Amino acid sequence: MSDPHKVFETYLSKNEGRYTSTKKLITTELFNLSEHFEVENFIDHLRAKYKTMSRATVYRTIKQLLDAGLLQKITTRDGKVFYEQSRPQNEHAHIICNICGKIFEMHDKELNDKIDNYCENMNFKVDYRSIHIYGQCNNCS
Ligand SMILES: [Zn+2]
Ligand SMILES: [Zn+2]
Picture (cartoon, rainbow, N blue to C red):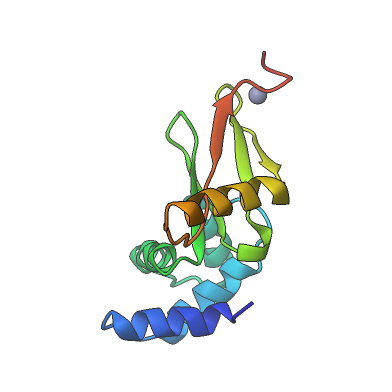
């Protein structure tokens, strides 16, 4: 797996951006998270350490990381947006409860292989897969 910093730097240089020390810091902090996260919580987490961190910079950096394919976006039915690192070797489907908003992960290599085969048959080049299933969890139904 290639280094996310390198991937991001390459992306930025193609899009007239510089990989500033602030962006580097945000990226490092992001890739230390193992859970799905919301931007506002992440900003609080950053600000606890770096008081002057600009909200706009964090939002811009997250958007660029998303464009660069390094983040995945998960939206719940009530409009909450979560992000997580996009790691090709760890791609998984999300099963999301519409009532309590809990996010479950489904790791199934066969499912991914099936999607890849399907796309290959239609000559579609897969960048990454994103599967979201919405409904009611065991506690809520
Ligand atoms: Zn639930
Ligand atoms: Zn996930």
